Structures are given as structure tokens and as C-alpha cells.
Length: 262
Image (cartoon, rainbow, N blue to C red; front, side, top):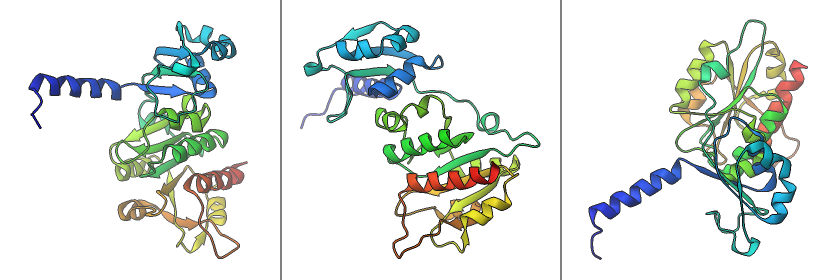
């Protein structure tokens, strides 16, 4: 096979880099919430006539002229099988700011954060963002590599939470955990082999900033992450099969933490 000319290689690299700097959101809920979010930089909106009618108020608020497309020849560059419902919006990823600003814990406050250790499935990450918003977490924190990036699939699963729930991406999770400790957080790692149940431990920490640390399904928490946690807990189960999907485990943990703070 003939080697590609250097200019062709550079052009392809530039195109890939440019593509990685934007995200295509799809689906009525995800697109509506992004249009309504003034912090979103919106680049291109493609909708069918039916979707445009349903998104009329959001399109007006978004300040971007839509391109009306034929549903049978929808031109947005989405993965095959994406359920776009006739709406796709190209955007820049959100910049939530610095961890110490978003997760600040002034005296007398007890915020919650969620930390994800290599949770790479966008559907799991999106569901966790949705639960984090419901239960009032200050942020969901994941790594820049080996974690679910901001994508259309994540946004659709999050059902709008991506626009409202801070999703911070850090270079080093252990370093971020140490930074949270310095801010007064106690870090609770979920581990199915732990001896302590989650409920009593979180009840003890009702007045303390808490970080809930969850690992990927299968491998769980990495050794360094586990060692950096202050406590390890398990979600008790009633039968022999005691494994939860990571997004379900996050929802249970967030509920248990919030219940103790009510």
C-alpha cells in the first residue's frame, strides 16, 4: 500500500482534532436542554420539521438558526442507530471550571461529590449524572482518559443533566482525591468485599463533606484509588447475587448519603 503524502496525513490529523473539539448532541431532551443553556456554545442545529415545531421555544432561546432536514436523509454525523428523534446539535464541550471552586465546602456545609474510577460506558456515566443532579451532588468527577467523555450518547442518557450537573475531568484521580481531602472531604469507596455497610458509615458523616468513589464494573476500584479512600463500604444485599450496575450503585449511594443529610 502506497504511503500517504505528508500533507494528506496532516489534513486528516487536523480534521480529527477539529472533530474532537465539538460534540453532536441528539434527541429532543438533550437538544432542548442544550439550547436552553446559555453556557453552551452552539455551532450547528439540524432538525426535521416536526422536531422544529416541538423545539420552537428552545430554538428561539438558543439563538441559532436551524437547518431543516428530511428525516429520511438526516445529515448529522451521528453513529448508526442513534435515536436522534429528528434533532441534532453540534456544540463545544462545557467548561465547568476548577475542582476547588466547584467542590468548595465552606464551614457548616456538607456537600456530596461522586468520583468515577475508569467508568467508561457513556450510558452509565449519563445515568450517574442524572442521579447526581436528583440528589444534589456538587459534581461528578472523572479522569480525562479511560473515562466516558461528553458525547451524544452520554447526554441522551443523562436526559438534560449534562447541562446542569458539573462533570469535571481531571488528569489524575488520586491527586484530585487528595485535593478533596485537603478541602475537608471524607472519601468513601464502594467495594463489594468491604466489611462495613454503607448506611451506618454515611450516617456518621451526615455533617461532613463526602466523596463517593465508584469503580468500573468488573475491575472495580484500582489499587491506588482504593488506598486513597478513607473508608471502604459495601451496599448490603439480601440474596446470594449481590452485584449492582455501577449507575444503580451510584444512585443507591447518593440516596443513602442524602437521606442522612435531610
